[in-house]
Length: 132
Image (tube, rainbow, N blue to C red; front, side, top):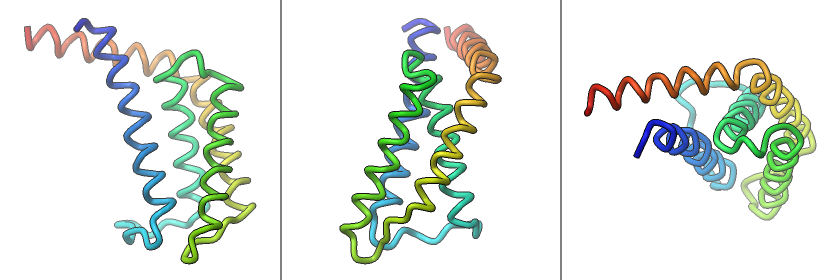
């Protein structure tokens, strides 16, 4: 596998693994206590900003509106599923914060997406040279 393939794999793992973790934490009846006490707003906004940014890096064709639509659909799905869990509640506020996080993630992708991709590609190339 060359540097480009390794980069694609790392970027996809950087999106799909955190997405799975967020899904578990959002849907489990009693998620574990956070190491750092952070408000729900910060958690939602930060998670959706990161996931949107990571999605645009991992799947370049999902840049812009496709990424925003996918992440909004994911947030809506989580809220609907939470409404069926007695220990959880679906809240419009969470969805609005998710939207703010999505907008931030898209903005970061526009500004820093290519520089981050180039940096990661260079790091992977260096690792492959040292390993080879």
